Image 1 (tube, rainbow, N blue to C red):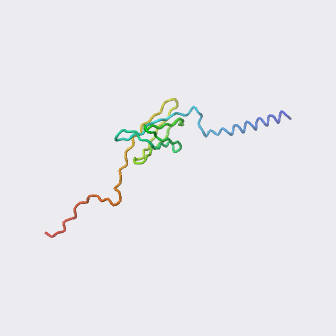
Image 2: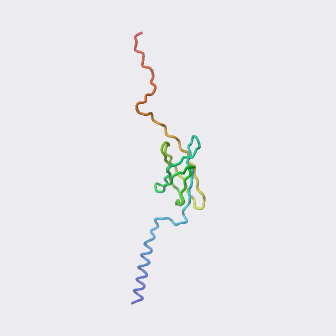
Image 3: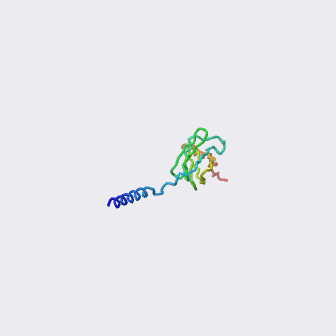
Length: 132
């Protein structure tokens, strides 16, 4: 009877522990690192404070030298966006390979500024309505 109870307990523990591994997260060996630099496309100057979003889940912010980094990126294809005030949002994709350094350079374009309210733009002269 003790052997039967012991066997049943062992089976129950095995089922419980087996149920904990649902495979939702990839194993540790399938991660890569990703780093990059955000710069102004016209001046090639670094852009600080740019928010880099990877697969809508991971985020990093560029430092004063425009640099950002992700230590653990699941390997495979990824999508990313880069946004900062005054620049057009950049979206692209890439592929992370384990054991290989993955680096990107993002060149942001300045957003065109809209005229402020109350500002007029030069207009063409009114049509000549005089009789000839």
